[in-house]
Amino acid sequence: MTTTTERPVLPSLASVYRSRAGVELKEFFRQRESVVFTLMLPVLLLVVFGAVLNYDIGFGVTFTQYFMAGIIAAGILGASLQNMAISIATERSDGTLKSLAGTPMPKSAYFLGKVVQVLAVTVVIIAVLLFIGVVFYGVHLPTGGEWFTFAWVSLLGATACTLLGITLSSVAKNGRSASATVTPVALLLQFMSGVFLQLSSVPVWMQTVASIFPLKWMAQGLRAVFLPQALAAKEPAHSWELGRVALVLGIWCIVGLVLCVRTFRWQDRS
Image (cartoon, rainbow, N blue to C red; front, side, top):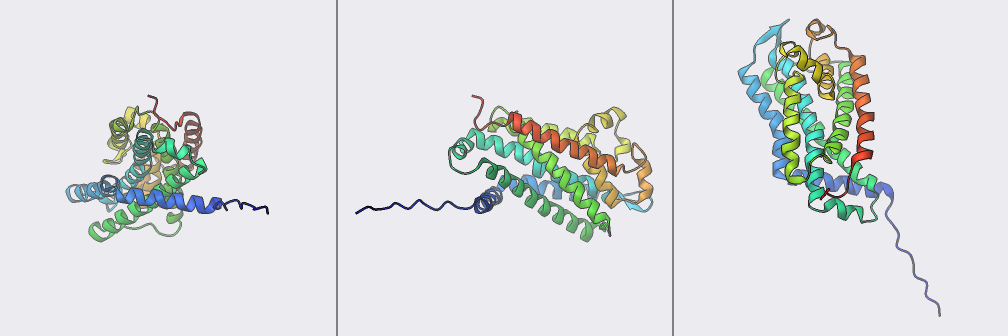
């Protein structure tokens, strides 16, 4: 009598992707340090700057209204570039990536899970910042087509910064050095890109350096959403340059993807 052994039924690709995305979300929200650093830091900055610098900058606009665009851009940068660079470098160092690479799980599921995590955390950060800005500082929400601009600027910016974060995770020697490598870079970019102060008060050479990177363009695109058209005259090009914002962020998405493919490692260099 012959016995036939049935092959185990493998889960569908969609269920693997869903499962990995769920794991990434659970792991993030269970790590208190990550939640505090990524979610609470932008909120604390909004509260501090809103309390100290809530003055009129012209055309009936308060500094907090101006600052809202920058702090949302900084929150997206933290949820994508900083979070990805540090968390992936840590997982590479502790052997998690090596273990995952040896499983039947498609490698694309790992990256999709990271993208879902970034998008979910970004949505939470934006919602919390908008809530605090509206309730406590009288920030005016976007209206009509401004929401569409808000959506595509945030999505393109988050995508570009996520890909750059994955790339930077390979620059750090190990997980312990990742934070020290990435955090100063992110902080410098925030100051040069007009996140913490009006861009017109930043030295021209700093504006030139900042214009190479996506954060400056993401913040500029978001200012077009939160500020009246009259304030566009204070921008370096005297306009919001939304077409150029889309172009630069799109180019960074392509560049970031190429860099990810060429530099990503599943194990530490050591």
